[in-house]
Amino acid sequence: MKKIAVLISGGGSNLQSIIDSVDGGRLNLEIAVVISNKEGVYGLTRAENHNIPAVVVKHSDFSTREDFERRLIEIIDGCGVELVVLAGFMRVLTPLFVNHYHHRIINIHPALLPSFPGTHGQKQAFDYGVRFTGCTTHFVDEGTDTGPIILQAVVPVLPDDNEETLAARILKEEHRIYPESLRLWSEGRLKIAGRKVRIQDPVKR
Image 1: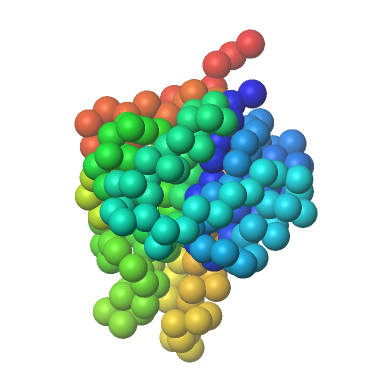
Image 2: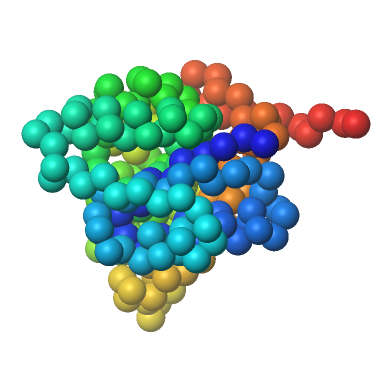
């Protein structure tokens, strides 16, 4: 069974959707470790509730981003992890980390990339006045939300929406497509070809 590490900075609702998919037998993966760069966040409690090893590595304890990431790499590699999953991890990763896990980091972004990258994607889309937005899973490269796209879900912006109601509906779709993206990866069905991720048919047995 392939092992993943999940990196968080907050409540961990996407972490919970992954845990539920594993526990429900829909996702054949082992969450080897959950790492948070902040103490006391609810995502750590979610991990502990399911007996998943959880570690706090505070970025403020390190003089450089690279030193912080070297500690992350030490923990992740020590757990035999094959994929790093970013689930609300609010730190910009340097080339040191990204290149160490080349094509082995997946992120989810609350907008339809390449539109509205960076922080507060939901608010950016809402303020812009788009009719449709959504969420995107993608492999991480050295840019900001620029890596090859895996899956996207479209969410309409309703006339009576505000930022909060829109964000809640986007989050519901995040909880659907993130475990699905990880399932496709675990089955070896994601192949990166340049900028595109090709989803291969399942192997017939």
